[in-house]
Structures are given as structure tokens and as C-alpha cells.
Image 1: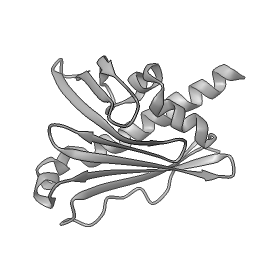
Image 2 (image 1 turned 90 degrees about the horizontal axis):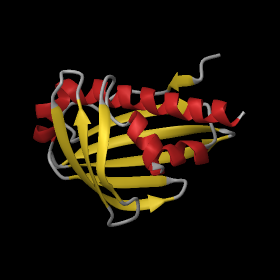
Image 3 (image 1 turned 90 degrees about the vertical axis):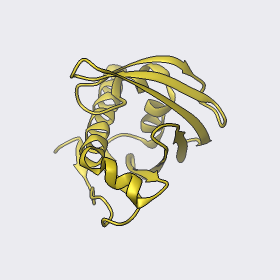
Image 4 (image 1 turned 45 degrees about the vertical axis):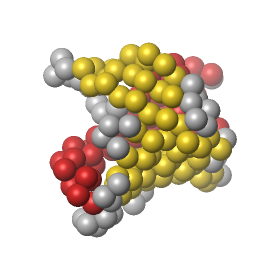
Length: 159
């Protein structure tokens, strides 16, 4: 049986300002949440396939800043800055991305030892999402793939 299950992993209808992705990860909620709140783990999985990260600043608490450089497989660097708005362990993380402006709401639901994560990327307008829609959907799915891989690796290392 696969460790990763796609479950209702589809974007909302065009015209909304949200791109919502859901994934069930075969790991306890606390482990999945920890992969979001442990800088070394977050650096391993954040971003689409082929990207790496260098964190300049990370303060994982409400009001804390996260500044980092994403290094793309194309050799380009992509500066990022986020502000953590909510950290409710182990249920929810909300962060605001500064440019382009959007919010990420990550909800973690306990499913008898597995975790359903709902990754909601909410733009200010549908027009803003539509400008980036050609990369957002696939990038978010790849992000969740990488998250699941890091969680699996951490569980394997604990065995």
C-alpha cells in the first residue's frame, strides 16, 4: 500500500481566489506538523520538485518572520518572505507570503494515525491567482509530495 494517498486533490473552480490541495499522509499528525515547524525539515521539502532553500531568518511563532531564498532547478534564485500569522499545534498553520501576496492555511486532521493535510493557498483576488495558476497547482502538489517524503524519512530514521 502506498504511503501517500491523493484525496480530493483538486483545485477549486476557476474564478475563486483559492488553490486548495488535500493529501493523506501515512504518519501521525504531530510528525507532519513537526515537518512544518522544524527549520531543518522545512528546508528539505519546501517548494516544488528540484528546488532547494537557504533560510536567512526563520522565527516560527505568530508574528515571526521567515526570509529565505529558493534556488530553482533553472539556476535562478527566488527571494521569499513570509510572516507566520497562526501556529496552533498540531492543528493549523497560517502564514502570509509578502510578494506575491497570498496566504497559506495548512490544516492538519488526525485520521487514526494518519494525517489529512489541507493546503489552501489564498490570493487577494481571483485575478491574482489566475496570473500564477499555470504553476500554482502543480507546484503545490509537488510541495505536498516532498513533505510526505520528508515525513516518511523521519519516521524511518526513528525506527
